[in-house]
Length: 250
Length: 310
Image 1: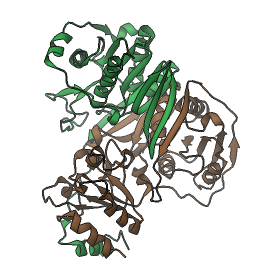
Image 2: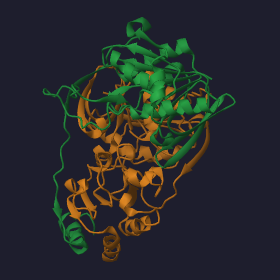
Image 3: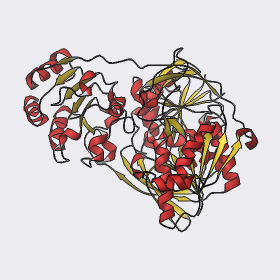
Image 4: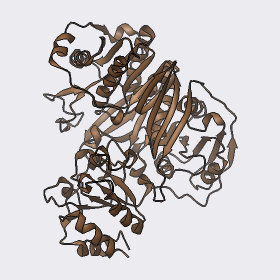
């Protein structure tokens, strides 16, 4: 079984982001970049499927700038077999990304497509669902458990109020939630070996898909900050304040 | 403006988050239709018809929609929604699953999790785990939107009598099927709908100690939540998690107990009207967002709070 994993280069999750000087976008100069954490989970799941003998080849794909090669190399060090960079300097929207991935899938014909449920920059939570829609195939979003058997994949999903398990025909798109697995770290020998693994680059124009922007970001701002209130001395004072000042309990 | 709102429900009961989505819709225009897709869901259609803000209810009642599989519901929404200027749904896991699929079918870029309506084509939405708010303008003819329901005041749910239409459109892609569901059984209110939420963190030290919170919750009619640290430590199940990667809540009163206040947790509760923090560590970041802070050991504070609430 061939597994395709889509990954995204994003601002590292430890970075405290802020708006740039003219509030037009997030400040990205001199900011540490990493693989989106949900994508790391997707790569890990693919590698585990390979270790179980279920997955054959693992192909990772990223759509982004030339620097996204760094994250693709990381995926190779973690156990992917080869990588494809769809290179563009534009910041594409989820629909455009999904169209690029569809074009790659038409070429690669994977049985299972794994990706993060959302990227921690835009927090859109759309690309996997859009890709499944464009492919006309099944989707298992927010997965906390994935098991492949006899041409189907069973996906346990984290939904409001609990868990839901679906059975999906292959090919299918599965998007990962936090508790699916705990990603490993790449070992030094594997990092060295990853440099020999194939990484091909294709320009986004060569895919021939419509990547036109449908939205305009008019600006970004800091959310309203909450002010710290008061410290109360004991539980009696707290209950009194809640009853008589805030009037939120009776 | 013609607006279609997708009802979120479990075939029995309308999810109150839909009332928040309707509130956002009412800022966009006056003609609001609601689609109820499900199986044996007529009772939900009647609940929706009673909402005064609504023009009409469209019901698609078929076993193919019973478990809200995105593969089947998305083409239905796309077919019915084409021709409306806006298609909205509350940003529940069901809508997050379905709406991007709808958008791709209509070849439009969806707008996720809006927290404010600026104009008919411009919206505010949190990005980077709520650390920044982006203002986004859509140029698409149909705007497919999910709504952060807690950011909008719910519309009234009784007093109307909108007409109910039935559609027999059937979309069954046949590529996915429902196997099982494990839903938490609880008499307490749903986290995202509760007016009071009390949450425990790593400081609770064990799952058994959450009983201290349950007792207080039952006196207050509150829902019980948890921080990611408490969930990761297996004190309580995933669906109790409040935070950027869990539930987003904005109750009238939020009581954080033994929670340090990591950004990821604050992102899920900082829009609460009144925040109380109980933590023995005076330096805990949670106190910087709390209206009332109590820096004492939670194991002495909770029994005392329990006894002081009649």
